[in-house]
Image (cartoon, rainbow, N blue to C red; front, side):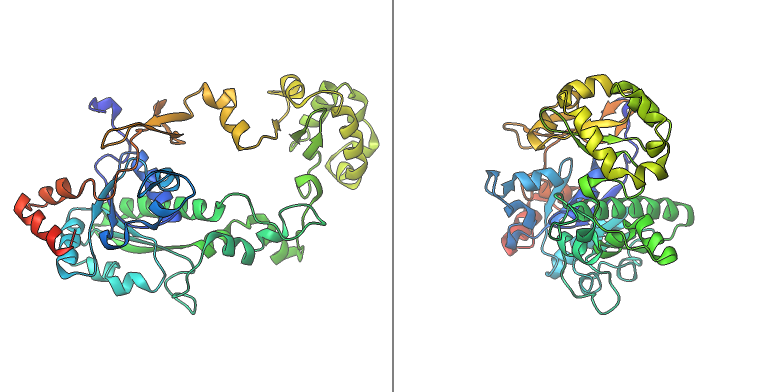
Length: 402
């Protein structure tokens, strides 16, 4: 994107990422999508980011499908932060960077010198974002932790699935993804503040706090009304009806009449206009009271046609969606014909990687499509930018620093 009009929002921002696995890499990937230079620090002695080793599918050694999914548009620098020379190089990077993001156990940023206290003398404007399982303070600061554990402890498993089923987690690592997004939001906010004041800061995000925050109105209901939300049948909304799954001739349809105006339109479109004035279903309160009866009635009506036929009849008039598996979701013409999938070119050359395109459009344009780099692919170019010669780099490599 050499044309000034093609400039991305975060062009000129440099982020050093001491990250691994899912949450941190997801957040910095979104920053890289928007033009930030994300320099991913990888320890050469352990095979880099552990995500490179997560199977079962691989393009090649140290290049898993999982890793590619979290690291597009980044640069990779191999660096051993336990060696003095590695720390010195890290500090040189910090000197001309905007932010450092780590996602490590809560007790490690201070031990590794990744906090504002340690880095502010090098660069007073540096923003230090710490993404951990349970935070950097308190009795759990040294605890490891992962997405599914957060879902369990934050109550998600009690509100997911059918009422008579076992505790059930969400099918995606939603806490990791949300925490990464939260960390990237914190990082950009910190940079805005630092550019205004000339002073950086520490910003903390944890998987647990993000999971808890996502309880949202369910938490407010309990804290103020004592209501403990449980699972609802058919994945239904706890108070709005119809807003749930219904059976069709060949599968399922999700209907969400979450505003009163949609109910009479829905009734008309399914050929049962009289339901709109039926006192049993006249408003949200009545429909919730008679939800089981309404479910049976709508199952019968909607079972007369296929899901695709109902989508054709209702789409754009009433909020509805077909229920797809992953393959159907990705082969959906709405996805395949609209640039939501892309071929990501490898920086080292070779066959491109087919993945989801970035979710943000910039002036209608798709964000860059560069695949994740091989481990250490950018080491030489980054070190040369810092003033190291080819001989210097060779010596560092011989010592195992890079």
